[in-house]
Image (cartoon, rainbow, N blue to C red; front, side, top):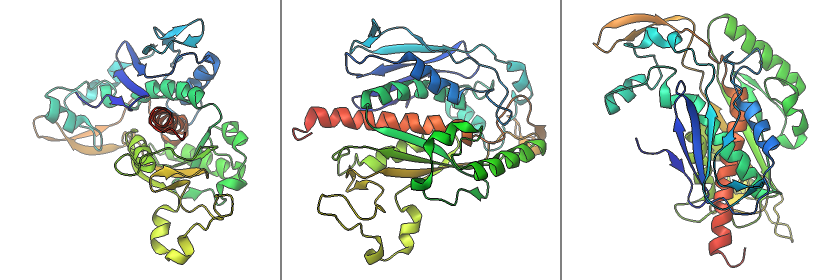
Length: 356
């Protein structure tokens, strides 16, 4: 299997399956001498882990990170940082009913056709549990970036949207509710809706908005390695993501150039920021903001028709522990992938751009 690594200079390679002994990864290219805050890393893991509230999967995992290399006396050495995250609460029997069946909208069918074998226990490598390793790398990347602030939050669940611009939100309230929405009124509606959906044995999708502040001018390359292109790739690599837009996004397609252009102030900042902090694929110093769309979780507790590995039409129903809405737990994953992208471009600029 290819495609287990992401990044150029700051690179993360992940390994492990949902129901294997452990997940893990190797972070390559992290600069030496960075004093790591291990509590901050574990905090990010707490935000992503299962079983943290009544509206997510009830699988209980501590998700405690064990670092194996690349750190000495609390500081990075510049060598590869190896780590593992033990799996401690697998219930593989929950998946015995799909051993020969393909779940609708899951990777089961294409995995078996591509590789000739699949780990049906929780989806194996295709499980969103793989993202735990990304969160570790993202937490390290955040400490490389220092002054750059990355704040993601749930901006919609189903047809419930925050109706305020991000500038009017208090990001310190994002962790005050299980939905991870900084608007308290919207959060209450979202939580109630997710609970209702769960009782129906169904699932629902939503969006995560991410705002990145204090980004220096110059991150990103202007042709194939545009900053927004890499952010898009990073976000679209997250399980269940169906769409990515930055700045004015698809709304910009409805506008005239005279409406959409960001006019300059004398100091080089812009009066508006429909560009989303990126122009020509390069950061311009303004806030970078983007939105990521997540589909409803494919496993539902309702009966559906599917096919088995002999081509027979069969009936199946989801079992086990699953998220009725993946969006709240996706918030730290979006932040992690954004941090990895920015750390990578930061090191590229530092290496190759004499003006940086």
